[in-house]
Image 1 (tube, one colour):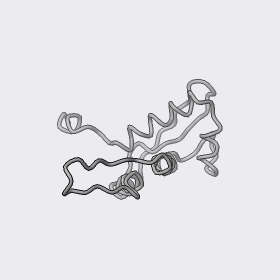
Image 2: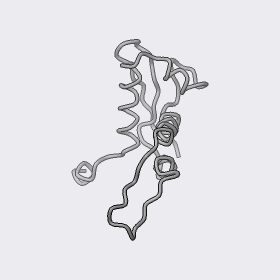
Image 3: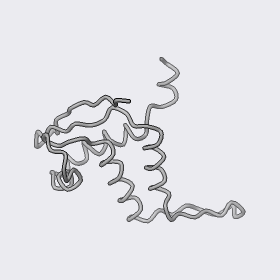
Image 4: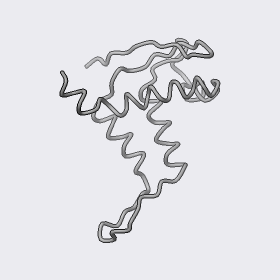
Length: 113
């Protein structure tokens, strides 16, 4: 199975970033698992809350970025480092696009087709 990709340019630095247009269910499951790693909820306690620690969120975000981004400026190595070294505005632009892909289409968008 071949996953379609697209190339986008960052708004400030003009970096060309190739990203997947969609992810597989397996990839989504791994990303969701990364977000929930080390989190515990007690179903018997109605006041139980999930508390995320920043390291868990950062690791899950890193995994999502590495899963969706194919290359930056044609280079496929050290994707995360290249992304983290970009201007914050470019990082946010790419991260938002990745989160949309990871989150998938909303149910109402699927029903429209």
